[in-house]
Length: 529
Ligand SMILES: Cc1cc2nc3c(=O)[nH]c(=O)nc-3n(C[C@H](O)[C@H](O)[C@H](O)COP(=O)(O)OP(=O)(O)OC[C@H]3O[C@@H](n4cnc5c(N)ncnc54)[C@H](O)[C@@H]3O)c2cc1C
Image 1 (cartoon, rainbow, N blue to C red):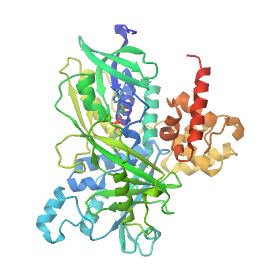
Image 2 (cartoon, rainbow, N blue to C red):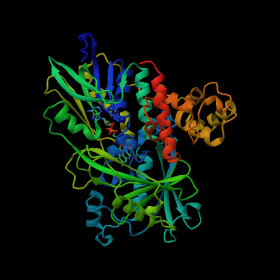
Image 3 (tube, protein in one colour):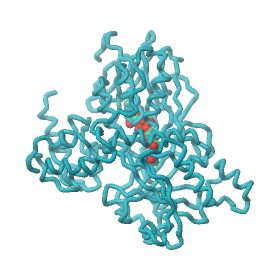
């Protein structure tokens, strides 16, 4: 095993390449700290590619009086949108109202309503929803996004896909985010600012020796091990945060995570307009239907306790049935499990605050610095994609005593790679790309801009025709794009490319995906070690 000499002690070693690990690595590197990160699989291979993909305040958390969390997230939406207008965009949410909509039984709001309006028997009154949306519009930082409006479903296109019993709806704003691309862009920016990013690299153990962490890493492909030394550890292991505390670092910490599985289904496009629906169930839960990847609709999510991080989350037949019948309660043309073309599932690593149900457990993050081993470790619990940048800033504040020379907060207002253009500039950029590369059709150009933003020009280079981009693997994915992803975005296999750097897996056959793997393996052979 290679042993590094003590001059090679990095300031911060981050375990985990999800959004929280990559966000902290970027922030810390930009403040001048020496940073290294290890991700045992692909970047965003766990929870950070399995979200509902919303930068949102979380309307339903208002019923739990999580005002601080909602305000923080609402303010953050527009800060993030401005820094990444290629992978994030505003979306309108239509919330149909019906008198049978109920609260989950144990929210603080439902308890109060049960006392002052017992005749409602747990139903959500319309004025309460309107009041919640008023707060949502006004709690913080809304300059770009449109406020709430009312809709008459009988006369508007938004009513067409819904059953006739829905007469009235509210419409409000949140933002879409390409979650797995967000992670990769943070990793790229961290690297550009000096961080070292290792993928396919598991942290096997970390021991404290005379105030320095000795961290053993294993390359998952070659099983080769090496040692890295660091002044401080960041445990951003998501669902594995507790496992890392107990088995990798072996310290005694009382805080823990509650693992809550959430699943989504994807079906062929259910309606023509570009808005989402926010459906409330009779069980107090809510689901979204979201226009997805041009030709599909994304439906989710569920909330179920999940026993163990090592158990791969899957969307169970019961969850599929639940989502299908929930949505069909609203839709004029019901859907069935036969319509499902893809499912995905992730585990929320929520801070265990002792809440009675999975739905009620707090979505806010908790950061704990532990020095019981001698050298310091920061454990990250919970959080939302929406608050990742704030979480990273808070993490830097928590560890500032150990790094007094670290720079000031800097990430608000600084664009991620490819995102240095105005929020309203997407259409112009698509037009510019089409003008520069006349062989692109509208769909291809749009896909490239919404993935790479300004970097789309670099991806296409000096190509004059589709042939100049090399082999076409299907769905406009070319050899040149695959190579660019390998060189610039840590992609190592077809799955990284078709499910996390893009969602082209929805359009490619198994054979086409296998062909990408074969081609990538051949190209890897040609590269010098
Ligand atoms: C169903 C669902 C819907 C959601 N929807 C939203 C939403 O719409 N909006 C929103 O803001 N938030 C949403 N969230 C929350 C959000 O997705 C999570 O809070 C966030 O992704 C957690 O990121 P993370 O970096 O903490 O964890 P992860 O993304 O899980 O990253 C942890 C990483 O650590 C790695 N790792 C673990 N152990 C080791 C080790 N020993 N060595 C090396 N690497 C290791 C893992 O491989 C993993 O990649 C949703 C979550 C779920 C599950």
